[in-house]
Structures are given as structure tokens and as C-alpha cells.
Image (tube, rainbow, N blue to C red; front, side, top):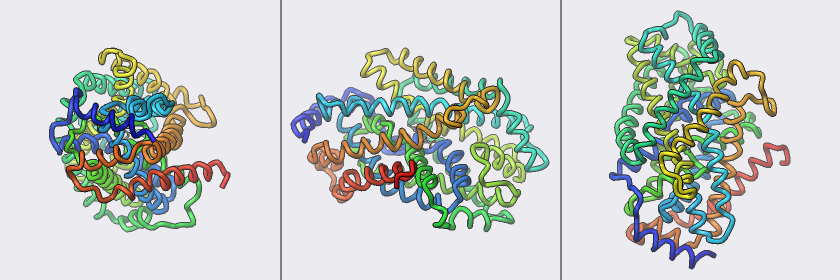
Length: 462
Ligand code: PFF
């Protein structure tokens, strides 16, 4: 429908690439995986799985990753690399004179909401890193970890302080620009985190009640699949893949002409899902071995992991290394979500990068503080029965990201010229594309209908 505009834009944008680019193939994968892998896999996936009944949630989650997630990543990659713009600019260039770019506002709102509550949890990792290094994380009983976390998170000073410190780190890296800092950090950090998770996995598989934990994680009880499981699993898929808000589009705008989009999408989704599964395999055997509740909610991982480390020889070293890597993994994710609003402020609003970064950080500090205090001083301040932290998490992950993803898939599936899609997927006809029809089919029909059905189901209409 937009054929004239889009092919023109395509050749224009491909000819004069002025933006920075990732330098290596590994850089592309490490940075997109760096964005995808973070607290969403290691903190959010286990607690969501735990509160939604285990295996039933996992099945739905994997289904959404492959049937909706991968096609929508491809759609974001096509928009980002094809236009060399942030999500706003991409909508504008691909549909000139139309109001599609409004969908970009959803992404900006979602990214700032996620930055706020995500920084709080990243702040918790700083606290636990310091406690691991100082040796004060070694406690006698698993229940003590619950008490310890409760005392810490309900306080009004340290959770806020660490949230702000984390945002300061985020700010400092963002100031250096996209490719330099992030690519280097991700190249080293991601493989190391992966290795460490493998070691912990083996340790958990040797625990006395490993079988019970694995049964909980992998045995689906289909009768447990209800609207909240479906909505939660869909939200988790979008959250974990950093999808639906233009983050992947923004990163793809830095891809080189040679980056294979479908392959990169597949690798990103597979590695991201693998890390989530590893986290599940680490957590649930321990939950059952230490007689904890899998449904503890957001605090689950911060109570279970220290108990695991405590039982390992050289526990303090493992624990320090782990929380350090988790802190870095959180940084690579917050950097990617911050790039959405920074790219918008600089490219659309013509702000300097410095001012844009300051504005992004300032918003994070204000709302991050609100979220940090929602476990303590502001725990009674509720909107729709949810604290600020839970509200930001729920609204962004379960509503804004899938809604944004739906708009992106409808846009690319129905409104972007097929030739443009093909040019992008085939790197200007230099590589063969086999899955294009399937991807376009998913973008046109499967993803939008799936997302609408889950929404309607969750508000009780079907
Ligand atoms: N995918 C990240 C995680 O799993 O931790 C979270 C995230 C990053 C969400 C970037 C959204 C985003 F734009």
C-alpha cells in the first residue's frame, strides 16, 4: 500500500547510513541478546512461572515466544534496519502522512515504566552483591533469607539509594553512545553469565528434591491454563524478548547491511528462552529442597538464590560473581530500553544526546523511587489494588508491550510493501529467504488475532 514511499525510503536510507553500526556479527547477537537477557529471565520468569502453576505457564510462554515473538522481532528488525530510524521515525518513513507513529508513544511510555521498576530490582542486585562480597549473605536457615529480604526491601533508604546508583551507572554508559560500551560489555558478559548458569544448573539437578522441582517446571497441567496464565505468559514473552516497544527496532537500526534478520531473530529468541529455562532449572529444585513456596512472587529469586549459594563450597565467591553478572545483564537491558526514549528525544525532538540522557535518567529516578518505596513507606498507596511497582510491571508487560506488538505486526503485515520486507529479509536479494511467507502470515493473522484473543479472554469477554 505504501509501495512508493517505502521503496524510496529504502534506497534512500540504505545509501546514506550515517548512524553508528555494530562492528561484528557477534556484536549484533551479543547486544540483542544482551537486551533480551536480564532480570526478565532470571528474576521475572521464575516468579511468574511459580505464581502461575509451573508447567502450564511454561508451555504457553514457549508457544507465544515462537508463534508471536519471533515474527514480531522480525517485524521490528525490518522496520529498524530498513529505515535506519528509531521506531517513531520508522513509522513516519514507512507510512508518511499517517498517524501510525502514535504507536511509538506506547513504546516510549512502556520503556519509561519498565526502566522505573526494573531499576529497583537491579538495585536489589547491588545490595546482594555488596552483601555477598562482605560475607553477610551467609545465613543458617532458608527462612532467614525471607526475613532478610523483607527487612531490606521494606526499608526506605537502601532500596531507593541502590535504585538511584543503578540509574547513575546506566546514565554513564548511555553517555558514551550505543556501540562502544554495550557491544564490548555484552561480548564478554553474556558468555560468562551463561557458563555460570550452567554450573548452578548442575548443582541444582543434584539436589535431593530436584525431581519435584523439574516436575513442577516441566509437567503441564492443562486444567490450570486460564486467562491469567495466558495473559501472564504472553506478557512475559514480550517482556523477555524486549518486544513491542521498538527496542529491537532501535537496535536493528544499528545493524549492518549484512546482518541476517531472520537468523538473528531466531538466535536471540532461542538464547533468551534457554537462559529463562536455565533459571527455572536452577530455582525450582532448590525451592522444593528448601521447602519454600514457588508462588512467593517478586521476592522468590532473592530468597532462593542465596540459599543455593550458601550450600555451595566457596559460596560467597559464586554469589558475588553471580550478582555482579546479573547487575551487568540488567544494565545491558536498561541501556537498550533507555535508547528508545533517547533516540526519540534526540532524533525527533532534536535534543542533544546529553540532555536526552539526563531527561531519561531523571524520569527513571522519580518513578524508580516511587516503585522502590512501594515495598515500604508507600506500600498502602495503591491504584486498582496494585502498588506502584506492581502496577508499572503489570501495565507495561501485560498490556502495553503486547498492544504495541500487535500494532507493529499489523503495520508490517498489512501496510508495509512486500518488496520492502523482502529486500530487508534477503539483505537486498543477497541471501535466500525461505520463511518470508510464514512470517508475513504470522504478522498478518496469527499474532494480531492471538493477542486480541488473550486480551478479550482476560477481560472476560470470551
Ligand atoms: N528483556 C529484558 C529482560 O528480560 O530483562 C527486559 C527489557 C529490556 C524489556 C528492554 C523491554 C526492553 F525494551
